[in-house]
Length: 188
Image 1: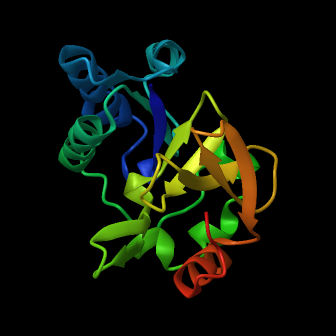
Image 2 (image 1 turned 135 degrees about the horizontal axis):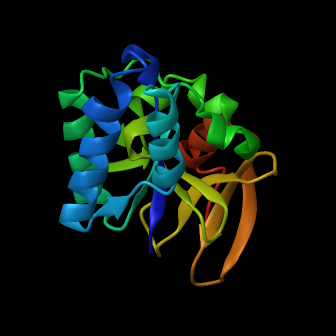
């Protein structure tokens, strides 16, 4: 399964440097490693060829192996001089109605359960879009392959259960999900 991530904060690079310092090296590294690709590469390349610059605020990356692919993306992005700031809702993800997550400290810190040794809510750099299900995954309860996240053009937080092959709404916001899960008010 492939997933999409979004690299933000690209306005840190001059428009003339975005292609040679970030987009081209990232596309090459992804292609050489087989870990992913840039779905919009052709149109981005055409824009750069025509104007000699790119006005990108974000870059969509498709990963075939999330863990290794995310590490590679982070290395190339850091080498290009793009520093992570406070997480912002990528333009691509606006229709997932996930502003409450990005406005919460959970987008920066996630929620790590020390006793259970598990991330129930992921920090932004672990979040991804499941394009097959139109689902923005932000965490998991850690059992049965269940994921938590936002559905495209829906409100609230949902769980996806691969066993039942269905979505179920579980909370109106990420804060309510975490509070409900930790208190036992939200169960599977």
